[in-house]
Image 1 (cartoon, helix red, strand yellow):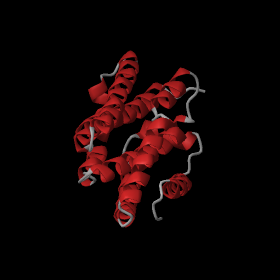
Image 2 (cartoon, helix red, strand yellow):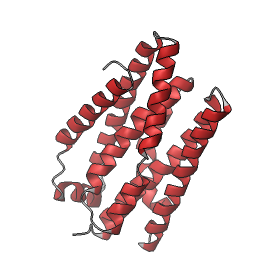
Image 3 (spheres, helix red, strand yellow):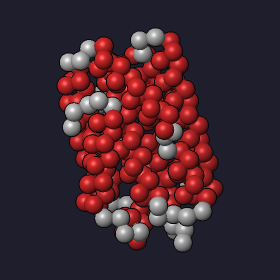
Image 4 (cartoon, helix red, strand yellow):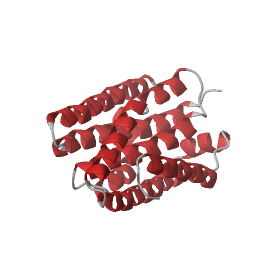
Length: 213
C-alpha cells in the first residue's frame, strides 16, 4: 500500500533537501582535491546530486506542494549536521562522503521500504551509486598508505561524523512531522533497532576503508 500524500510529501521533502545540501557540499569539497582527476570525480558526484534533486522536486510538485514547503521542516537539522562537520582537507572530505552519505542512505532506505511502486523506486534511484563509495574508500586507503598515522585522525573524524549523523537522524525521526512518523511506525521501523543497524553497517564500512572503529 502506498503512503498517503502527506507522509510522502514529508519523506520527499527530507530527501530533496538532503540532495540539495549534498550538491553544495560536494561542489565545495571538490576544491580540496589534490589534482584535476579527483576534482572532476567529486564534481561529477555533485552533478548527480543536483539531478536527483530535480527528480524529487518534480515529484513533490505533482503532489500539489512546492519543494520549498516540503523541504522547510528539515533545513535546521540537516544544515546543523553539515555546519558542524566541515572538512579541513581532502582526506576528511572523502571520509565525510564515505561515512556521512552511507549513513543517510541507510536511514532513507529503511523508511522508503514503507512505500511501493514508483515512489519507492524513485527514492532508491537517488541513493548514492556504489562506485562513489568505492572511490571514497580507495582515496581513504591511499591517504593511509601514504601517511599511516593519518588513519587515527580519520578514524576519529569518522566517529564524529557518525555521531553527528545519528544525532541529526534522531532529530528528524522525532520531529513534529506526524505524517512521516506515522509512515515509519506503520511499517514497523523501530528507531532504536534502526540506529543499531546503522551503527553496525558503519562499523563494517570503517573496516573496509582501513579505519579503526
